[in-house]
Length: 303
Ligand SMILES: Cc1cc2nc3c(=O)[nH]c(=O)nc-3n(C[C@H](O)[C@H](O)[C@H](O)COP(=O)(O)OP(=O)(O)OC[C@H]3O[C@@H](n4cnc5c(N)ncnc54)[C@H](O)[C@@H]3O)c2cc1C
Image 1 (cartoon, protein in one colour):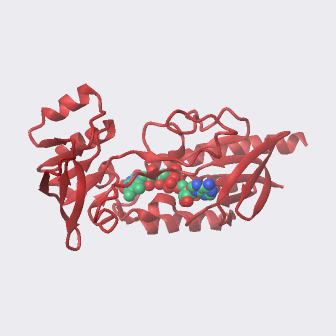
Image 2: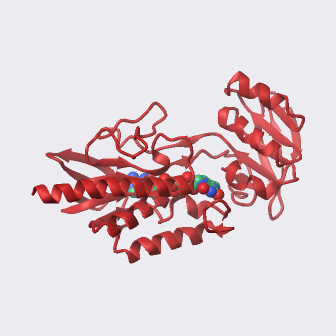
Image 3: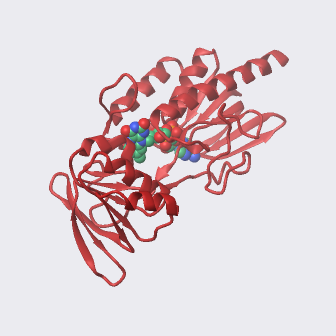
């Protein structure tokens, strides 16, 4: 029987592992892929405290090494199911089952991709998933945003303060009228409604994109970056049996990361929260692990 199982070795899970180990808790981290989570797909990070600029893989490695040095154990198997009986949780992975007293779900999220010619090739070379993170890299240059929701328009507004032109390409506009009108008032935001990206092109990095509508009318847009704002996907179906998830699939958890189920916390991008970033994921990991550690210590005493 383990004390704490952490699902996911991204910034939330790795920080949770450090805090729980420092509280003297036995920790097993289950990771279905590579440690680091979304960090490993991030070129440069410029908004994580203490680093002016750090490559994603380097930050991931530092977080992992710290957790390992603190004594966290790692099992590289994806979690397939979690169920509870008499206050004991069973975590089922590709390779077997582990019983534990408490669980922190830190399985993150995945950004939806554009899926046009060139979009994979230029990922990290101008195709970005985060305007707040990467916008500064394209200061004084024209950029494009793909998406028609609230986030796409917010990204366009954020980028309009940095970039010469922001071309917003939206198959369908679903953002609120107020946000759309605010964007329309900006001289440097150009909205292409009914258009989708047909090709992203460049040399070593992105230099532009071709967009098309359903009548096959096309436009060629010079852009140093293409910001993808098509939303996120979550793999929370397996957890929906033990915790409550909202309509978008996020695990409903309070600011203290507690869920409706005693003994289960949700940390990082996977939970309902206003800002999904590395620093907030790490913060959640610390908060969740501190609460889970207190819960486990109480359970130990009551045995
Ligand atoms: C391209 C890109 C650039 C970004 N740039 C920045 C930036 O500059 N600054 C910033 O602050 N934020 C940035 N972000 C956002 C930031 O990376 C995320 O907010 C952060 O990684 C969330 O951390 P997390 O631990 O909650 O989840 P994740 O990083 O998503 O990690 C979750 C982990 O859980 C694992 N997992 C999932 N399901 C299972 C399962 N069933 N069993 C076992 N393991 C599982 C995954 O493999 C993954 O390793 C960026 C994101 C992307 C995609």
